[in-house]
Amino acid sequence: MDDWETLTDPILLAIFSYLDVQNLSAAARTCTNWWRISLDESLWKALAFQRVGCRYACHDDVTWNSELKRLIYHAPVHLHQTCIEHHDEIYYICFSNSGNLIATCGEDGIVNVWKYGNEIQLLFSRQVVDDPEYVNYVEFNQAETHLIAHCITMGEEFLRFDGIIMVLSIHTGALCPVAARNSGFAPFRGTWLANDTFLNTDVLEESPDDVQFLACKFFNNGSEYSSMNDLIAEENVETKTVLQINQLDSDPEFVKVIDWSQWNGGGSNVSGVLSETKEKVLILYLNNLSHINENRLKFYRVDLDSTDPVISEPIRTIRMNCLGLQLSADHRYLVCNTRRITVEENNWRIEKDVITMVIRLENTETTPEIFGENQPMESSSMSTYFFPHVSSDYVAAESDPDVIFLWDRTSHQTISKLSHRLPGQKNGVSAVAFHPRDQEVLVTVADDYKLRVWKSRNRLNSIATGTMR
Image 1 (tube, helix red, strand yellow):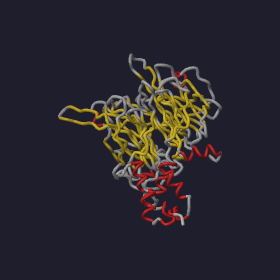
Image 2 (cartoon, rainbow, N blue to C red):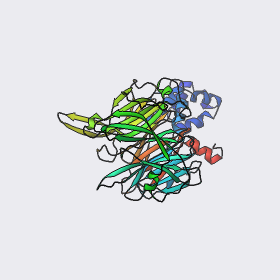
Image 3 (cartoon, helix red, strand yellow):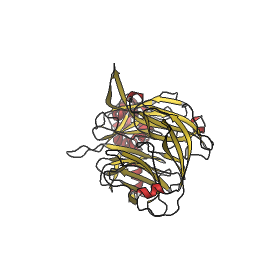
Image 4 (cartoon, helix red, strand yellow):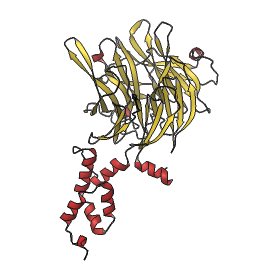
């Protein structure tokens, strides 16, 4: 009789405890008895602890075996592709709602649209503005026929910059500007309210402390425009005030929109598509120019069909100093990067550590999920932006030195650190985005002009075998 066959279960379990994942899996394929022993949860729990730390907490409804498999095979931690089509720092990246398209923009004033697939390909590229002007935000509409681009341009006064929200058509075989409007506040990036309507801001001349938020419906008349001024002067945008607020010394910067039904407990929006209902919640980040410790994230309920603008108090206010925010693909969560402000007597100091916060939008009274703290390479300045992202299982945010942190949302443990280091130079990361239909895909952009695509081992195996959907 083979001596191995006489070993008792406790002895085999003790021997198997010295094996790594690969060898334990190989042992399980040896015979029925070894397969039975290899299923012991204590073995896989120990391996999980080795990988992500002893504070890791397993999901309640899964085994340690399947949990470790998720961390090893289904987390987007492997660099799959690197693309260079920008000539300067890339500031922002986003997917379209279906995940079929990607848009990037940056300091070079270029907007690029990419086709997502096993290998992403550049579809369209447009020089929207010229140096020293730049583009720092892009966003697809739901139909994926247009995108908005937020441009920072030189103002008429010396050292003054203006904000312009431009609409670009992407369904005519090229990126074509079709509409543009000056923003009442240069930092305000805008967002989509409908496929043909974007949100902009204005200031009342008779009441400069009041901010108006305008629903801007554009019409594509097929005209060609020789300059930005011609595009702004074109009378192809109808505006309607949907919200008016009084914000002394505060500039609106970031804005997101969700359906009121979701906010009010209407359930998950799996598709991430805004419904036809006109009742929305505007999520506004307001930057106080006089007192940085008075910055606020405010939530307003608006009715886009109302004949009169909403003049009301916010339904929710959160004090924070936001460096960048994003919605999850299902619109259930808002993820923000923030820095603490320390106030001592009359002096305040911005902490260098950045905290990544996930807020559940169905019930903002619940305690946010906190991840970090991480230290971005840039100085402690509130003018530096880092855009994190969140999926059902993971949170991704940029950190120093030149690294993306990937966290597990259940345990709050770091799964991996995705390096963007370059020899002899710093390479800060500006934004990240999970694929809206596949959290095993993550894209990142950085100061080195590159777009990087990260995928899970599972996705890479599917590509290699030709079974990738």
